[in-house]
Image (cartoon, rainbow, N blue to C red; front, side, top):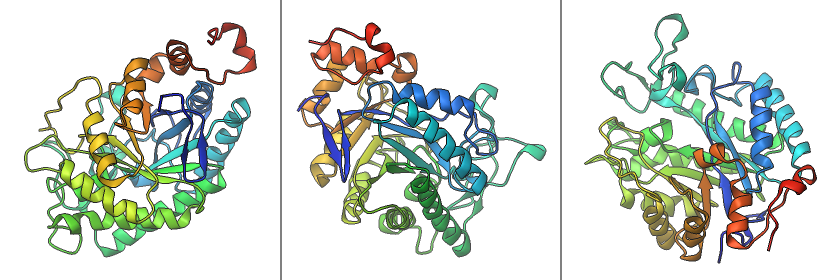
Length: 357
C-alpha cells in the first residue's frame, strides 16, 4: 500500500489516500457560504487530494462556534451552500466533497480566533448548550444542560442537516465528535456529569453521540459514506482515553460507520498534548487494528515520506492535512513528485505541474 493507491469508502471511490481536513474559515454570513468559501473550496478541490472535507458546519444556529461559522440549519443556508458546492465542482468536477456536521455545545458563542476567540458578551452572545451545566473554563459562561426535548431537537437537526447536505450534492458526511464540542462533551466524564440515561457509565455517555450517528446514517443515502471525527484522548487524567475511543469505534462499526477520523484534545484547558509529528498515528493504528474500520489520521503530518509510511505500515488508511494544505495547496503535487506517483492537475496548470516519473 502507498499514499497514491486508490481507496474506497462504501460506494465512494478515492483516487489516492490524501484528505483535506475540515478547517473552520469563520467567514460565513448568518451561516451562509459565500465568496471566500468558493475561493477556498475551489483551491482545495484542485489540489490533487482524493477527498475534500468542508469545515465544521453547524446543524443549528446556536450550534455555531462563532457568528462566522458555516451552517446547514435553514433554507437560506442550504441555498447558499448548494450554490457554492456547484460552482466549486465546475472548477474540479471529479473531486469528491464531504462535509463535517457539528454542534459547538458549550464552546459556542465565541469570537473568531483573530478577534481573540473569547466567549462573547452582551447582545452579540447567545446561550450555549451542553450535557451538563459545567463551564469550559473559569470566565466562560455556564451552559444550559440539555433536557429530553433538547436532545430530540438536536438529533433531528443533525438528520435534517444530512438531508440538506445530500440535496446540495455532498458525497460523504463526517459527524464531529471531537475537540470539545457537543458530542465530545457527552463522551467525556470531564464535561458530562449527568445521572440519567445519558451520563455516568461510558455506555451511557456514548448513548447520545451514537443516537446522533444513527440519525445521520438513516437520513443520508445508503450508498454514501458516513464517518466520525473523534478525539482519541482528552490528554487529561480521568478524561476520555484511547480505550474509550476503541469502545466507541466498535459501537459505531456495528452501526455502519465507514471511517474514523482520529484527532485528540479540546475538552479542557488542563490538557497536556504531546505535540510531535504524527502524534495521532499510534491512536489511529490501535483503533484500526481493534475494529477494522478504516481510519483517517490527522496532526502534524507534513512530509510526503512520512505520510506514505503511515499508509504502507498499516497505521491508517488515509492521511489528512489541514494547515499544511493552507501553506501549500499543491502539497499532493509535490508529494506525488517525491514518491514517483501522479495526481490529476487542471489543464490550465499543466505547464506548471511536475514532470511525473
